[in-house]
Length: 206
Image (cartoon, rainbow, N blue to C red; front, side):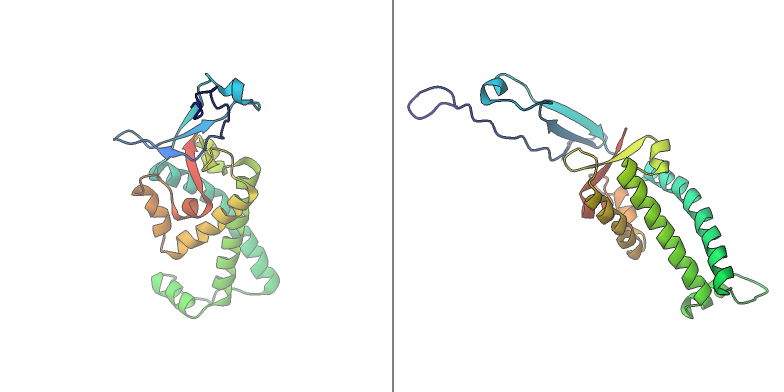
């Protein structure tokens, strides 16, 4: 762009936004981010350079569900062991019953049975700690790693600690909506669940 007097080109350069944009059309969901060069450049150096475009593919519901099942395979045994230890120490046990069908568990839930409440609290705590630690440390859970996925923020970078914390709490919000917050991934145009929208994250193919 030239100035009003027809002088030299304006050498001022602005930072390009890195906000991902979803590709249009019937192609698989793709998030594209424009990344700046690896070093700082002056206005004269920017002239004639083309921006580097990084393209990533967002992961859909079924593959993310498979990763979640792998993670549950880790969380549940740990939670059961901790629950058994805690119940033995506190002397809290489930009431005796010949049959433990659906009615039995509904009665315990409605009566806020101490053993069931403790088990639910420990399961939730183990799950949240697992998610938070792995997201902060590696940007993905074990299930995501095995299936070739990772988490990025809206700028294409690994999520910050704050985003990981919000994303972890977002799992509680997704569960509180009777899992609709997770099922939303299957119909959302950007393949993001409630926890992704709250934290500003995507799950992409590695």
